Length: 148
Image (cartoon, rainbow, N blue to C red; front, top):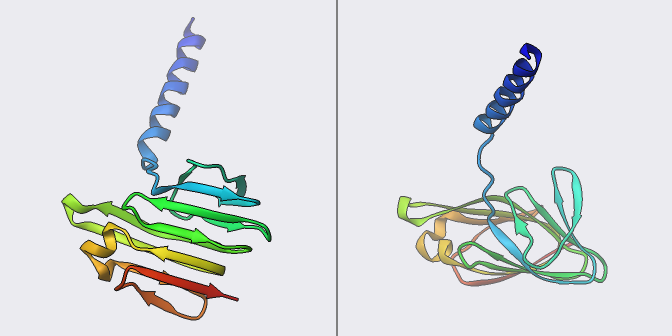
């Protein structure tokens, strides 16, 4: 009986510890549409993208040679990826009531269209799109980026 009690306490403390140390995982948007081969790389694992799949900070969305994807972020930002393209969401904070806003994405390759959402309207200086050769500060509403 004492052994069972010790095992139950160990499991309870282990679960409590793991839950209290981990930050809550909040999604930043969803995969809205998928055509052809599209994957999300999360924690070094490739996951086949599906419509309504939740996206997290540091996710890399990659399209194949026949793939296209549409993403919608929590602030209504719309991102479209063309064939053989990839983008990583580096930072996303959308808490307008707390005046905490940030969106940073890095286009790794291919063609990406960006249509600004609420963050760009409320705090344009808090939106940044990076490429291997440049950083783009978004002041408008629609941008098309091509990275070789």
